[in-house]
Length: 152
Image (cartoon, rainbow, N blue to C red; front, side, top):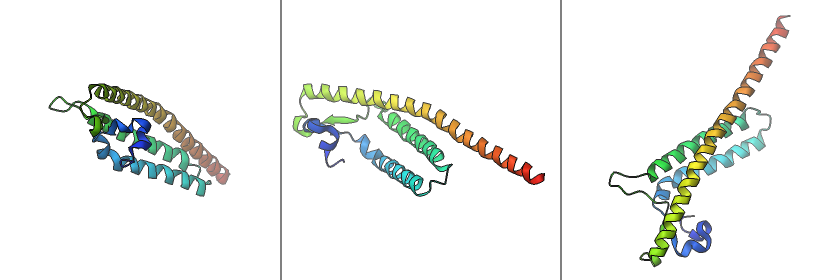
């Protein structure tokens, strides 16, 4: 994706370019993508593993939260007062004030969207943890009932 900005920005690729912050997190984002594909593959291959989908989804959400938190922290203000933008103005239009404002609006929008996504992840973690705990309680209850039947 970094070599094909058209896939990310569409027609705006002529005036915007990805910021350096994405290079730092490219490996982590790629890992999350591969993990999601593997999670779906295992769920399809082993449907009898009833515990796996909810547990893997919880793990994936937690990993997503961690990566997103690091990204938000990295985008924050640095020691010298600047910040790491998500997008920058392309080299061909570097000196245009109008396109600099466009880049600032896009950066603010991405920051707001990432913050909202982190909030959504926070809610999802609670819901998914509840589902995992409900499954564990169900299995423990079934095991207790089976043990009681064996003792009779």
